[in-house]
Image: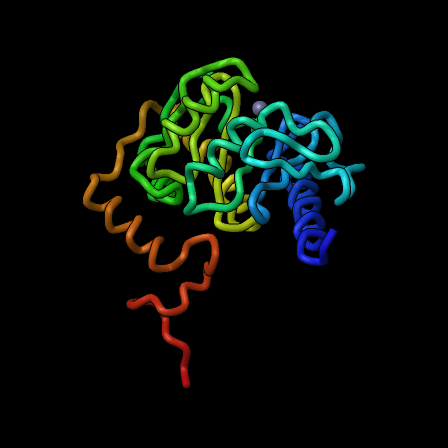
Length: 228
Ligand SMILES: [Zn+2]
């Protein structure tokens, strides 16, 4: 195992443990993959993150063959998303409570709050239900992720994507927080949504700020300027 791969494996273990400590993951429900060389690394099936070691991560090829432990039962959507979405390198899946609450009602998150834009559009869609681990679930997830970096999975959970591991974890936590706010807001009735032209402005501003990657907004016009 070369140095770069070992460093990536260690970072994956760190992100998995932070999925637990941030509260977005319960037990062995979640899974994580990252592009590596001509294939990808993915978390193994049924191994708790607190005892998982870098060498336990599974090396997979896009043809579905693997080396090492048995991969997560959700390897199909990890493989298909990494293959189709060359704009991202990481797929993170979990059953975070509020995102899953909305997914149980097949609710798409509308632009009731400007942060809906973090996933790249005016909504965060909910994919149609299919049995876990199936090709149908993977197809439904890819459809819901069109032009988005996150989606809910009907009666199942959420998927967040990132250019790197930190960005994917950040987005998954944002989706969970936004879901929690939406569930709370719904207790007072369906909240109003921001108009599309405002969301276009928000999404463009987030894009320029590399939102989630460089939250200090260096290089963005109209932000506070450092005194020289
Ligand atoms: Zn799941």
